Amino acid sequence: MTPQKFEDILREIQSRKSETPYLEVKAAHEGCPKKLFDTLSSFSNQDEGGVIVFGVDESDGYREVGVYDPQDLQKQVNNQCLQMQPVVRPLFTVLEKENKWFVAAEIPAVDLAERPCFYRGVGRIKGSWTRVGDSDEPMTEYEVYSYEAFRKKYQDDIRIVPRATMNALDGNALEKYIDRLKDGKPNLANLPDDMIYELMSITRENQITLSTVLLFSPYPQAYFPGMSIIATVIPGTEPGVTGSDGERFLDNQRIEGTIMQMLDGALQFVKRNLHNKTIINPDTGKREDRTDYPLTAVREAVLNALVHRDYSIHTEAMPIQLMMFEDRMEIHSPGGIYGRMRADQLGKVQPDTRNPVLAAALEVLGIAENRYSGIPTIRREMREYGLQEPIFADERGTFKVIFKKAAEKKVETESCYDEEVVQGLLLFCRTPRTKKEISEYLQLSSVSYAIQKYVLPLVREGKIKMSLPDKPKSPKQLFYTVKTDEGGM
Image (cartoon, rainbow, N blue to C red; front, side):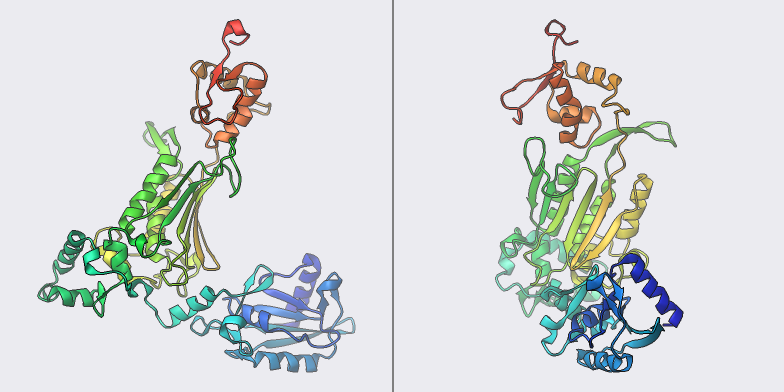
C-alpha cells in the first residue's frame, strides 16, 4: 500500500465514521490489541482479504489517536499472525500524520483449499471466523465443514442410508433407469445388474445410497424428513406480516416425495398462486395471458435447488424454502455456492458440482440437462418477460434466488382513488364478491391492500356493505354494492 493510499483510507474512515466488510480499525495508542485472531481469521477467509488500521479509536468517535510504537506494534501483530493456521503473512504500511504514527496491516486471502484460516490456540471449530458486515462472527460448524467437504471432495449425495433396502425402492422406476443407463453403452449393458448398481453408485458396498433414495424411494422423507420443500405465500413483503384477517400465510404446503415429485409439486404450488394478467404483445399485437414470473425460470430455479443443495448430515434437517411475497419470489437452498465459484460468475464459468452422481442420474432420467444451462436460462426468461435481472446471493451457508415482480400499474391517481375505478368497482360488486375476486378485478396481487385501499373506504361511505358485518375478518365475507333505494348506485 502506498502512503497516499493509506491517507485516502484514513480520510475515508473520518468521512464514513464506520468500519466496512474489508476495513477494521484499532486504537493501539496504549499498546497492541491483545486479541486480533477473530479479524485475522475472518479477513483471511474472504476472497478480498482486508485491512486493519491501527491508530484510530472507534470508541471515541473514530478519533485519530496514533499508535504507541509502530515498530513494536508490527512485531506484536506478526506474533499473533504466526499463531494462525495457515500462518497469516500481513503486509505493513507505516504513515506519519500530524506527529502521530499510524500502521496498516493488509491481510491477504487464504486460498480456498486451505480454508478456514483459524487460531490454533482454540482449534478449527472455535477458532474460525467470518466477516459479516463490519463485524467478525464465529463460523458455524457447517461453514467449517463446507470448506473441508470441498477440499476432500466429499460426495454426500452417495453416502449410505443404512435403513434403506432394495425392497423399499420403486422397482419399476429403478428398472427403467437401469435400461436407460445401458442404452448405447454395450460394455455396461453386458455387466450383471448388481455390478452396475455398484459402478453407478446405486449402492455402495451393497447398501443403498442417498441419491437412490431421493430418486427411487416411494417416500424419501421417511428417512430424511427435512429433505423437502416448504412453500408459503406471505401476505406482504416481509415474513411475519399478517393479512387483513390476521393470517400469516395465504397458502402453506410441505412438498414431499422424490426429486421429480417435489419439482412437480413446487411448480403446481407456484402456478396456483400466480396472478394472471392479459397483455398486448408488442410484436404480434395479440392479447396474451401472462403470469407474474416465467414458469420456465421458476422450474430451473427449483431444480437447481434440488440438485445442488447440500445433502450432508449438517443440513439434512433443513428443507428448501420457496416463499412468494407481494413483490417477489425467493427460493432458499441449504448450502452456499460450492467450490471456487462466486455469485457473479454463475452461468458464465463452468462450476464445481457438489452432487455429481445425482446430477448425472437426473440427466439420464431426462429431468435435467446437466450442461450448466440453468442459470443462463433463468436470466434469459426473466429478460424476455421484461423483468429485473434475477438476484443470486450466497449468504452463510444458504443460496438464494430472488425473482422481482414487475412494478404494478397503480389504478389510483394522486387522490385517494380514481372516480372511474370507484364506479367500476361499484358495478362489479352488484354481484356479491369475495376479497380475492375484488383484488383480481383491480389487478392487485395483495388482497389485503385491495380491501384496505379501495373497499373499506366505500364501506365507511355506505356505498358497499359486508354480508357478515359482525364478522369482518370471516373468510366467507362478501362485499356488495348498496342498491339505489338504499342510498347507493
